[in-house]
Length: 550
Image 1 (cartoon, one colour):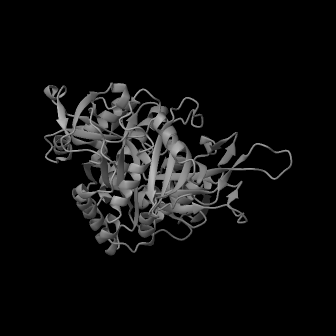
Image 2 (cartoon, helix red, strand yellow):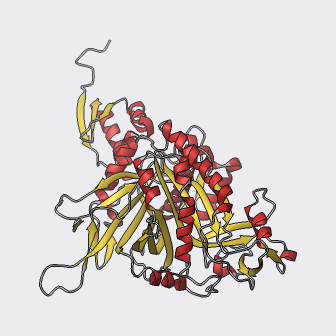
Image 3 (cartoon, rainbow, N blue to C red):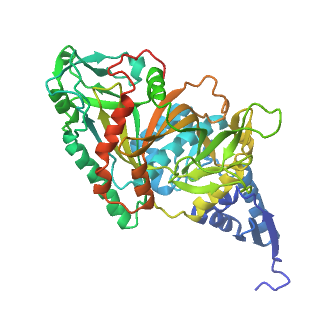
């Protein structure tokens, strides 16, 4: 039996852990902590001050310190046959999706990113051969796959998709021909067509919406399901809005390409859900000539302008967080200052319904601030896309319903939000651009993968019968951000795409307050469609503007 004199002396060591590395030391569900205990025999715990407390023999503590140092420097993880551990914790339940049947998905990622990926039996995670730069690309691909799988696992049901043909100012026997489009006009990679009305006089605009029964019924069904989920404590935040674009048609037989079709035949071929007829698809955005016509028609309406920035990040746990910030122009009161400067808006011009965290500057004296103000948001779930084809007008629209799941944040997610917020709080406005801190300061495991700047002008509109709508013209420049984050801020060579969003004030108010019924929302559909027609009346019907820029 070993005497007290022979027993090794127990010592205590305290190791500070950077706050953005604590999760890596702990590991998913404490896996790394258990690994350190098993390999070294040391007693280890992490306190709220982000310190690792070690207790054991000098040798045990030294071995544990070495492992922790390897974790912090990224050197931890045994090599297996020349393969290195991939620096990504993949949730076990999604590992099969990442690997794919017969390694199909893993092989695809390997080919795309020029790394070799392997999964070893009995070893958690993935291993790779390749450069560190290509490892980052592989991690980006895997995060995208896991992120999509996470979203699908939370979906109540697939989004409803359907098409409605508006017959305003048309007769059932009016004829249309199919106008073939160039591939670069639609970017679909498929032979695509647009309907062109032949020489028929348009009927006088009326408020008749007798043919909307099928559209109303489908929307009522979607809202009914959401209402049921809301009553059960599920989905509670709802967004319903529309934006303009063009509906194009594919899957047309060659012998049909030169034929003409009546409005009745078109409705049957487009609205059918049996999968055997034409396949319409919606492309958002409107053409420059259309925007100019609409703006001219809205000159007398009150309008506000802002610049919205969106940044979307992947987190270490493969969640995605969208950051939204609004900038506005502010004129200085100092004498001799002519040009307005950009400042942060302390409030969003619209209700933001998917907020995780709202960050405001400490200065509460006004509506703007020189200090960062932004929203950190979760992603919506798409619940409905109703494409409304309006042959008598210059373009079409899509009516969307989205919900934001009321899912409690896990401690891990809350910690990720806090870490990202501490990085974002140092964003700044520089030379007319909103810029994030340097990539070198981005916390470990976080990735910026999408960036958008949108110049927005919102018109407040009121119909003759008193209904209120908000119409926003958005001039967007968006880009996917590569893994080395080069050229993140410059939009000089990024195409400007113009989109128009429409919100019904009564819908927004009812859905925000939460006291609504499906029938109440659907009852406003004719009024909403009437407003869409009024907006489009500023654009000449069937105007051939395909060559114009967006």
